[in-house]
Each structure stands twice: as C-alpha cells, then as structure tokens.
Length: 198
Ligand SMILES: [Zn+2]
Image (cartoon, rainbow, N blue to C red; front, top):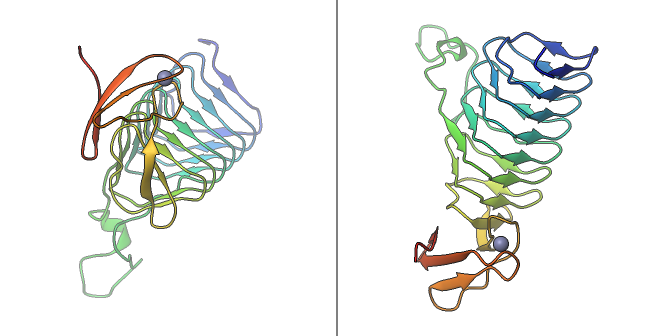
C-alpha cells in the first residue's frame, strides 16, 4: 500500500502514514501520531501520540519523540536522542492539587522547522523552536530558541556559526555571505539570517 514499509517487528498503531515512508525494526508509533510521506523512522524509535512529522523527515535509531513535537518537512534527527520534556517539574499525582500529569495542561509545543538538523545525543527542551535549516551539534543541550540557519553547540547550546541550506558553513563579511558551495546568498542582522532576495 503506497509503498509504505513497516518492519514486522515494529508496532505501528496509527493510520496516518504517508506513502513511501519506512518504519524499521522495533519502532513504536502510537495511535494519533502523524507521519508524512517518504520518511525514514529508524530502529527502536518511539513516536508518541500527537506528534506531527512532515514529509522527507529522517529520524535515526533510538529516538524518543514525545507529544507536542512537530517536525517539519526535510528535518533530520541523529541517533539517540531528541529528548523533549515539559518545561517544569512534573508530578504524576498531587493529592488535592489540580496539576497532575494526566491533566496534560503542561504540554507545550516544540517545533523543528523545515530542513533543521539535530545531531546525535542532542537534547531539546520542551517549548523550543528550532528554525529553518538550523543545525544542533552533537550532544548539545538546547534551552532556548535557535534562529534559522544557526549552528548551535554545547551545554547550554550557543550559536557558533551559520550553515547554508546545502549544509556548508557560511562566512559572513559584515552582513553578507555567499555560500562557497552552492552560491546561495544570505544577509544577517544580529542573529537573524535570511536568504538574500536581490
Ligand atoms: Zn550552500
């Protein structure tokens, strides 16, 4: 059906899977999760209910993608793990106080925008926005929003440079950069980088 591949050892409970998507061994995709077309979900991944994944997204082995996360088209998540949690400490149950886990009012949305790449073992705090084509380095701990095209590394993650849509580093001269690989042009104003429109 629609060239969808679901490995026989995986547990897929949702019907919302786009054509051409592959789900590999021992992965679990919970009911009501949505996965677009031509995605690649690696071994031992867990995709929780309510997660939205666009088209052409690759999620490498062993990732846990929790409720509230939206991955836009073309995103990449390296091996083990994109980990998102609630923004403050949860209690599973507090007698007489209406802030229990099951109320789920704590749930916040995490957006991984088009083309963004999250490398192995990076951790992304809940409620964060990772901008278009941004790159989160190996093991980075992301505690605040990442601008489009930024490369962030470390704990807490900080901007170390800027990356072209093609994946090559950008070298800015004042407020302008041209990719040495693909020739795309960019402008920068403080921490906002955009494709040049001239
Ligand atoms: Zn480029």
